[in-house]
Image 1 (cartoon, rainbow, N blue to C red):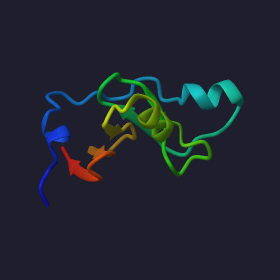
Image 2 (image 1 turned 135 degrees about the vertical axis):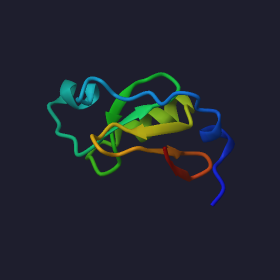
Image 3 (image 1 turned 180 degrees about the vertical axis):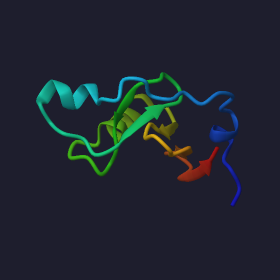
Image 4 (image 1 turned 90 degrees about the vertical axis):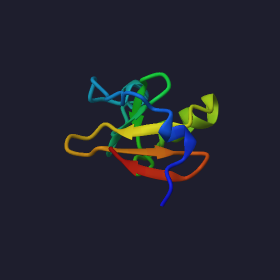
Length: 87
């Protein structure tokens, strides 16, 4: 499977440092997994979480690529191209 241009453009993967979804913290919600935006470095919860904050971030900002912020996972996802790649 070909890797999309958005993922190819990533020179250095940003990895989430905080270990929390700041949006979930504000409302007292719990998250399942965390993802880090490769454009701005924001770390938010995944689509398995109740509020899907990272997908909302994508729709608001159009930042195309996220990385898993979970220990042991090394993958990227491109929203507009629906493209997945391990690194």
